[in-house]
Amino acid sequence: MAGMDTRFRELSRNVPIPHPWDLTTYLDSVAEYRGRAITLQPVDTAVLAGAGCGTGSGLWIAKHDSDVIVYGADTTEWHAEHIIAHELGHMLLGHGPDPAPADDCAPTTETLSAVAELLPSIAPESIRHVLGRTDYGNTRERDAETFADLVMLQAMRPPRRDSLLHRTFFRDRRR
Image (tube, rainbow, N blue to C red):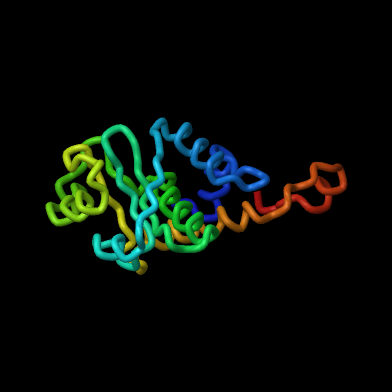
């Protein structure tokens, strides 16, 4: 399997990170790339933590035809964007369900009840997959967190100058 830096480079070619950074533009690009609408749903962090989301930071809810990212509304803008980028990382890195999820990938009754309480506008039968941050030790969580870190670092980076000097002396020689 390709390393995270290689995967990130490939994904950022397919879904470029906008300069200057604009979360809405990036969300639109990810949605277009995946062919699925993405909706953001800010909620009180205490409610999110009560929905079985580990630290209470974020939650990706894959519906049959679209995705919802739930995140704590009472955090800083930068932290909220990092949480959203983490959940987008799960999506882009393929951590979601297959078209027909296996029984162990389907949300439990407890999870569906928590989501119904958290977001009553989402019908439980429309939810295909719920992926929360419950175990920071597993590979998927580390990869999604690294992805979010790389997105935010890339977003803060000044745009590359496309000059002969830059292409000659400062190009990334690891490619």
